[in-house]
Image (cartoon, rainbow, N blue to C red; front, side, top):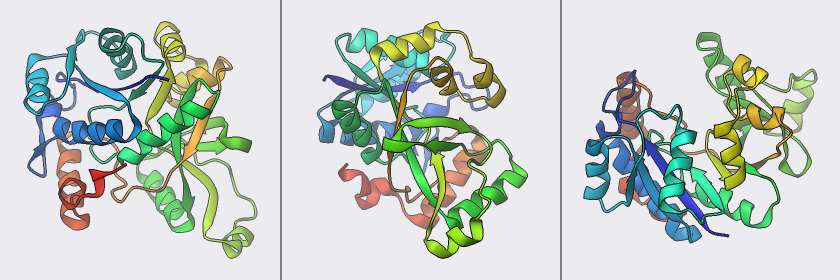
Length: 274
């Protein structure tokens, strides 16, 4: 199975123009993500490429030795850009990992885990989840009181098959006190917004209309489930820095605070191996 990791990096972000070039702890955001892809690709035997929509993004990628292809700035989503880049750079790749260019704290092991699962599994789409401890679940509940659409949870069935995703915390727990006494892990899985697709599944996604529940929840992965396409979850360990994407200048400042408090994975060797 030939795999390619695609990093869609869009310069013209509405909320954060020039985002791929923005420094996070003195290192451009895109450079951080390229480092992650490089480590994961070496560990898993995959290829990788940056999907740029602007020469300034392409120049940054080339300056750190990353392969790059130009994709249209008018593509509607990172998924569309991932497929376009894979078609250009690796048209024979069977499996495409979409690593968005604004995810600077993604452990390379997450990508390697998806690729390993795809090599042995039969599903069309693969995505990581983290089983929450009770303290983490309490924290998620508190955050949702302020930002109710932050954080996605997943119902995980036998063998890791995803039954559903929601911006609500699912499942509801009627016997929580009993379960808390029984062990440290809650029966709640938080979804990590990273995807690996077999090429036909990604092509289906970009050519299909938005699904009913996808639109209601604002979760693109529901398009697959509504169409009866299986999604396989891969359980991974929680990352040291739990912050996921960088969507705004405020997020960039928060990311730097996390680096100061928790340390920088790029400088302490955490990302030197997947």
